[in-house]
Amino acid sequence: MNKEALSPPTTPVNVFALLVVALLGLDFLDLPYDASSFCGPSGYWTIVISFGLMVLPLVLLAVLLQRRFPKENIISASKSALGKPLSMVGNLIFLGSYLTWITLAIRDSTTVLINCFLNRTPAWALVVLLLLGIGYIIINGLKPVLRLAAFICIPMLFFRFLMQIFALQGLKPDLLLPVFSASPVSYLKGGLATANAFFPLTTVFLIYPLNTKPQKLPIPVLWAATISLLSFFLGIVGAIGVFGAELTQRFNWSEFIAVQHIYITFLVFEQVGLLFLVIWTSLFFVAAAFLFSVVAKGLRQQFPFLNYRWTCLGLLLLVGTAVLLFPDDFISRTVFTEYRRWLVLPVTVYPLLVYIVSVIRGKRALPNEK
Image (cartoon, rainbow, N blue to C red; front, side):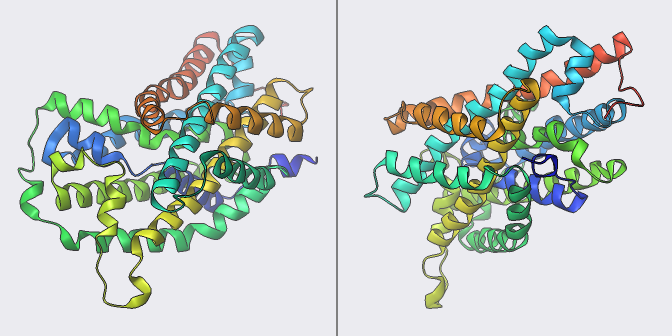
């Protein structure tokens, strides 16, 4: 496979499309639960706090790493900073976090589809179909994923925001009051709990060398995060404003249930909830393909003897087997809810560790390194 297919030059617009699709495709419609459980009626502030706690430091760290290792992603930069033995362990933990995330995510998403869309379809059949589709996209590298993300980004954003705004028609303002209903400590805890919504943003450490305009890296990343923040904020406000903080915590995917309450007189819009699920599924499909692709590419970077396509096949089989080990919906959702919060740590702390060690040891990319 040629190098351009695996590592295609990427414009800032494509970086934006890729990140916003990944962010919105992996939100799992459950942010209102976390927000309301920590901060009650004013839980919508938690996602704003998590933006400051997660996004801004990540963007700054990505810029610092890019300046120090302009043509190296976190996998190769860690080899220079930490040395081969330590970097191998760190890189495997870093990539393994994405693989664990996507394993739990696929199991959770199949539950959404079965409960709300394909209630007669067995879970194993849906998992196989999903993984076959992902494999078809990623088999030729990252380039097809970039094209698909750019193709669906704008229309999916338009319809998603349109439906989230329509979902506010049943909103009761008194359910969102008082505006500040929790202590500063509770808001901090809520912000940390909802920070996992920005987990896909950490993939910037794997793709920033592909950016054709490195000096403009913060712009597409911040725009993608800001637009996602607005969508997350609307989702939380809509769910709490329609059901109230207490009732929101009793629903699985309360944002989706809030969207189902949209009433529009035109026949074509009667199944708005179903349309919202289709849009989210499309975003999830591309987001999952993106994570698979960067993990396979990262493993090949760490172990050059690996073949990209065979690595993709191995990852698909591994994830498919792991997904089917969670036959109980309640257990799989409980595990995902708990683990997704902690999986943020390795993908954020590891790049910080690499940068700090590189500064201490005076390591940086040499002028002739590619």
